[in-house]
Length: 63
Image (cartoon, rainbow, N blue to C red; front, top):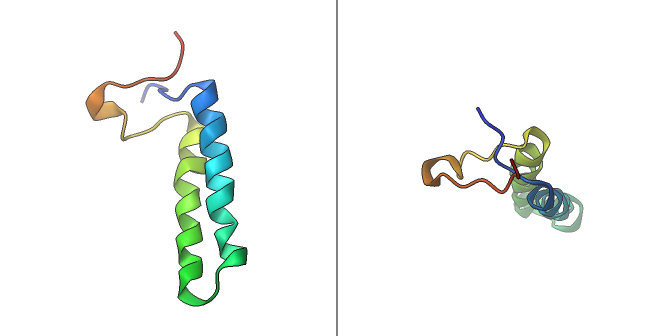
């Protein structure tokens, strides 16, 4: 598992993930579950690896 998420990509994923997670506190009822989608970009940012990039050979990380 080679790292394929660069620094700018990582920052964007963290910001987007936190924004999505904030939906848990903003939305009501069952709609709050949509906030858990924020765990995906946060997780990929923390491990610096995105499985969606692999089939396309994409890497935003500098060598």
